Amino acid sequence: MIHWLQLAVGTLVLLWPGRAVARALGVAGAAESFTWSLGLVAAALAFTFAVHGSLTLTLVLVLVAGAVATPFAWRRRGAEGHGPVWLAGLGFGVALWPIAGIVHGDALFHLARMRKLLDFGALHLRTVDEFKDGGLHPGYAFPLWHAWLALVGKITGVDPSVVVLHESSLLTPLAFVLAYELGRVLFRSRALGVATLLAQ
Image (cartoon, rainbow, N blue to C red):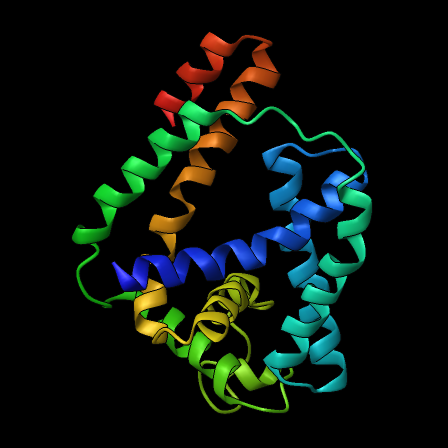
């Protein structure tokens, strides 16, 4: 339960800057907010790599962006909340938590990259290579997802292995809302939004 609350706080801290920017721009849906959240982390991480900074710099840049956008966000009306969809996603995420198991298989690769981002000071793309002088993994040349996990770990102080195992449970409610919004917008129907969510 403690880890769930810690990860929830860490995830919300990372989601808030994107939400604030999206609301300040007048596009406050879940998809827009999440896109801006990832975009801010990506931009801050790119700057960190460019100046060979640490992950602390990435976190500070993301939080500063959120702080700058927040006064403008309060002036805008928020998008509809999709309360039942959020609750269904929360319930599903809670159900996923106990079946996460242990870190194994490909998750070990993700955990290793996350630990490098957390522990190394002068970050650049070559810092997170799989092997010394081994070149970048083509699918993860820019480690955005690993940085997200590492930032949640940095904010909360939770062991990286716990973050790798359970962050997906915390993001399940958001995944539910994104699937629902996709169907609702695409088919212009709430019922088909629910159908899209169920299909997903």
